Length: 363
Ligand code: GDP
Image 1 (spheres, rainbow, N blue to C red):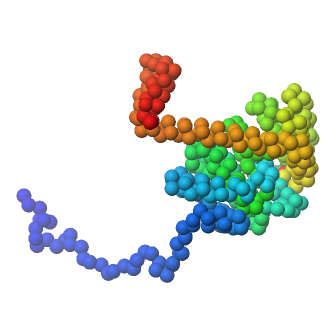
Image 2 (cartoon, protein in one colour; image 1 turned 90 degrees about the horizontal axis):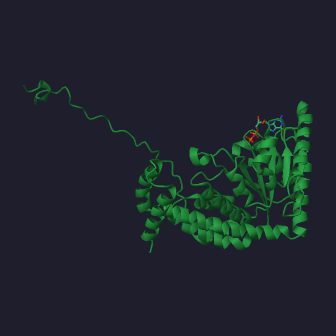
Image 3 (tube, rainbow, N blue to C red; image 1 turned 180 degrees about the vertical axis):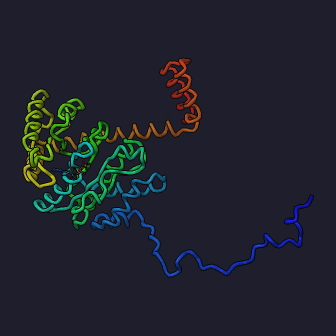
């Protein structure tokens, strides 16, 4: 039977036309469209020290879009002759060690004492998973964030650690070309990312805490081989004694390690970022180191070695991306993985199958 609502005469469902609504877009709001900049515009702006243009260039560097990458590479290439006049300091510590508190205070100290300009960058391996960065956030460094001679940039969040590290290295070049002669690269103390930061800085500072068992962990994780300075934070109140004890433990542990290539003996100091105690001593140590390695030639030699290392890292990164993003490989990968898990193929055979297939696709 025909439903009454379908009848021509049934008007119950007729929707009356309402009154016309205004546009949801405010017609008075005319946000100026960002002008597209040419490579030369970027370079000119960066070299002049324009931080807005610098920020935009860093965004290009961080972009995964191929057209952005092309411009970014040209900008970096042209900025290269203007960079290098800097000191680069890696700062690492587990979450809660006091990195942000310390960097805020350290940054103000070096700007006040040595002048110049400071850029704070970050490598945050957790951002790969969470797509959000916990490091380098401006709100964590309140005083430094409003300092006219500072530039704070959170960790790039896309891609593998290798990719993120490359972007940070490129950002260092841009910052240096923009006149930032002090670069801090912050990282969370969790293994791999420290190695990446170590490969791009002149001095590696490890922030440790007393009485957390970190003394031993630090030794285990190979921190001692990388550290040029170990600083025990929160040496304030009734923690002073424990901090001193931790420092003594680190110092004695250092005796078991072979002398570093730089000829420098890593120093262990205590300080309090929160109360601003011992900050000068930490930075006197860093500057003593820089003078020492500049005098013995290690500074320049290390930077050249780092460039070479970075070249190989870039090659590895590109090869890896090319392999895993290859459509044929993408289609085969899950199946080969299943075969390995079921014991049908050994891992070597599976890898070989994939590689042979991959090399067959490139001409
Ligand atoms: P991050 O996670 O390494 O960046 O550490 P934060 O800088 O956020 O510090 C973690 C906590 O430790 C915060 O509650 C700080 O206030 C506190 N803190 C940082 N430095 C000191 C210090 O020198 N002394 C004391 N007592 N607390 C500190």
